[in-house]
Length: 97
Image (cartoon, rainbow, N blue to C red; front, side):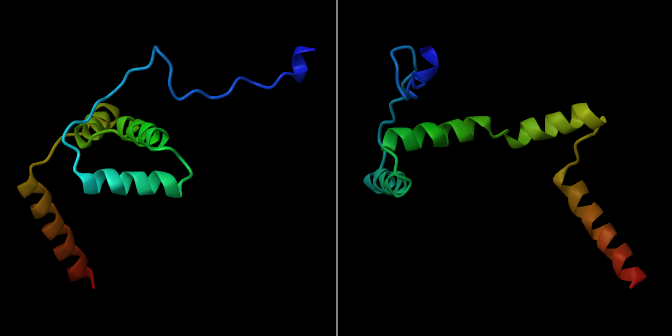
């Protein structure tokens, strides 16, 4: 009767998984992370695995810009060009009002 068996438990660690060692972590940072994990009902390891996974999945600014450029044939503006465009748009908007 295999259909009556429970699924295997989720494992957060196995011999094939990578490990990370963080040296020089300030006590205050460790304490804050430990408290956040406890508030979520997690061990510090579980909390950090989820947070590091979330961090790794979030694209960097450059990755987002590259994706936009590939998708829409976009281009990059300098900071000065962005500021000038914003000022021009605001002036145009204010002229309409």
